[in-house]
Image (cartoon, rainbow, N blue to C red):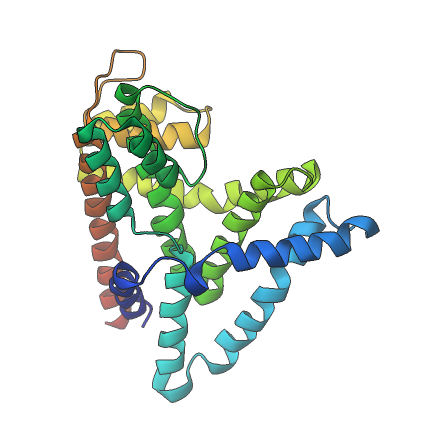
Length: 287
């Protein structure tokens, strides 16, 4: 049933309009309201604040998942899984649309629009950079966005069901809320970041393996090993670039917008590999 929910969610997500119930705005309002009440009591600026932020929306979902997941021959659980995944995939435009917007702006030489499209890919405002430097950064963001908006939600959904997918998205939004608020508190920011790094540990490695299998395996493997001990996001992005046979970071790179489209295609192939493995696992389990 999880595989069916996953396939339906991927199709539904590609047709849903941006915003609405999948937007982060409602969560940010809730987080700001809760912060105003917990901060004066000393209950916000640490890991406990993160827990108090996440538990109220997750506990009812967990009760619903356990209590009604098998109702109506499993159809309630199926609908809940599809809705949870669509929410976890994010409320913005699809990755395909964002890649298309960036490549079109870059080919036109429109630096302003390309910068806006790059910020959309990153999910935040990046430092200003020349137009010729943008494709490499955009290709990196495609990998990271694929991890955050596809691979990690799918992994936690397969492992824990709807509460896993929604829980991951809530942690991502909690970390983003900490970034966009001046007075969130360093303890809250650090705690949310630690939780997110833990949740991303396995998805990072699954995505790196998928990218290697879908591209140049030996080059990707070498990049992953060479970046050992470095920043996790840099390591994952370097592995993705190596899987496209892009030269190492210490050599000159002259990427164009085609590299961004190629990275998106590589990510899609790695996702298909993951879905095939999941389908085989389901068949073997059923047998």
